[in-house]
Length: 321
Image 1 (tube, rainbow, N blue to C red):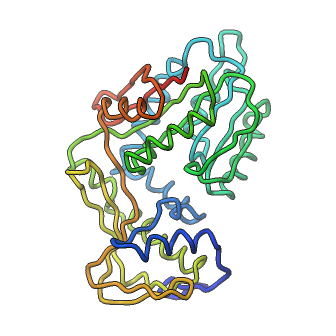
Image 2: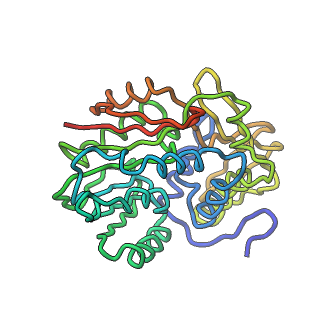
């Protein structure tokens, strides 16, 4: 059992050790956002999506619900929905439940790609009950890595909701969309959800909620390193911080050291000065023109844009000929 510091030595995971050390020996210190999503991280993130301050999920969900089949290009049938970062089918179901004029489901295949392997197993079991006709293909992988999809013979629609595109630096966003275009192949479509620029007075509470769930989510990253990377972080010596970087156009999340301290990670000593931070996540905010430019640089053409009445969130339909 973990003690108060959150340290609980167990077996190491080489991939977690490698990712952690690569960021922690750099200057400034960073950790990749993919490390958030162990089982506890997934649970905490689900709680975040239901917080009153976190407008993103409910706004995007309302858009998906209200737009329904108008989100899809005309004539899509016998199609595969390929969700990048899909450990939960909640948003995908707004598409998977759609029917063609013939009454047949638009999608007969659902490919879900995510690093959370346990969550993917649960997803597959749920869909086997709720959508028995659907071929569900979970792929436990980092969607930023090169991907070879299973053979897909019909129409293909990529799906990347939740403004996860905002967690990527602009160059990485172009690289991701370019790699997704290659994976999906010619004549494919892509549906992208992206958070839009707005007042920091609205943005910041979404990443620093009054209940402290986002802080727990951020600190859980260190707890995971204690468990899977042979680390000995004392969670009491770090605090969560969310800031708006106006120049870069992004929310940043940090874990700030409360004192001068050292930590061990897989036998490596990592030194921290008081006030020094580990940069754990970016969340870029976009204009429609920015999304169009990123998509074009990756070989996609922007075909349609939908936003909510307050212009908080956008859903973008892209086409690769």
